[in-house]
Amino acid sequence: MLVEFELIERARSGDDSAFNQIVQAYRKRILGTISRTIGRPEDVEDVGQEVFLRLYYSLDQLRTPEVFEPWLYRLTVNAAYDYLRRQRRRQESRMSDLSEQQVMLADAAAGGKRQDEEQRRTKVRELAQSLLGQVSEEDRILLTLKEVEGLSLKELEKIYRVNENALKVRLFRARQRVLKAFGAQENKEAAAKAGFSRADDSE
Amino acid sequence: MDRMSRMDDKVDALFAEYRMACPDPEPSADFMPAMWRRIEARRVATVSVFRHWAQVCVMATVALTILIGAVLIPKFQNNAAYSSSYLEALSAEHSADYIHMLAGGPR
Image 1: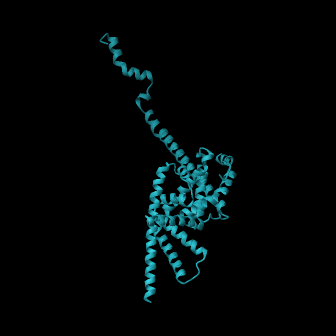
Image 2 (image 1 turned 90 degrees about the vertical axis):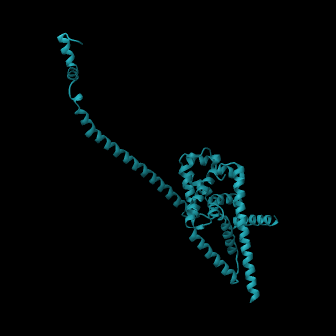
Image 3 (image 1 turned 120 degrees about the vertical axis):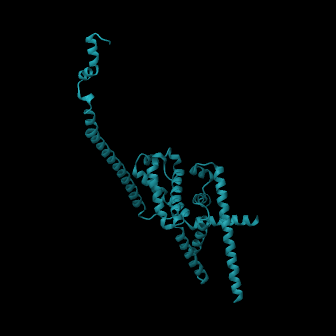
């Protein structure tokens, strides 16, 4: 816990300064989780504010301060899910954005430009996000919390309020889909490399 | 099978790298003020919804009162049963009985 139970109790009873302190303690962590879940840096703060807005208006429903963190994560999951669903409508334009970025990266690499650390990170981000984009919004969030955020099954059980076996099944299926997409990506890259080397040979 | 486990390892490594490639972002200076503005906006919206419903309820109550006062009450007051006194209504109802009783006829 990043804050004392007493602070949560004060915020529950309507103390705005206590609520402010809670937000300040958790905002960075929550923004990080959102950032890795939705993959759109420009919208992270907006979704983060939505999480804390929901927290403010639902804090009185919190049974005990002990369950505060799973509660906050549940609100984060719900806000990220709502965002991803809204974004699905704009997916076509988003795909064209991504492909444009990928073309730019490929151009940079083909032009023999130095691939610095930031470019490598960008590539990792894009690949991970495109793989996570292969599963449903719910599974994407679940997989991110487990595989990227490193939450345990026990913690996920508290957040999702479902039993461990159900979570394991969902995680297994989601991971299988990601692996399949990863395999397809590898095959595509291998085919592209083979084509590229054939073109070199013919020259 | 070997390919699957190799891919499993690669995906694990990719997710670990992804975690490092996306560090927790620093909130902007406007994060807290913008959040409080949104909280306040929601509060105002909620209050205005309640106010709107309260106004609708008051209007409906006034309309119902006017309807009762202007239409229903005069309608019942014009009824014959209410325009005569109790004794008049009673005598009108049983006048034939009194005639029979006075004449010594059947009850």
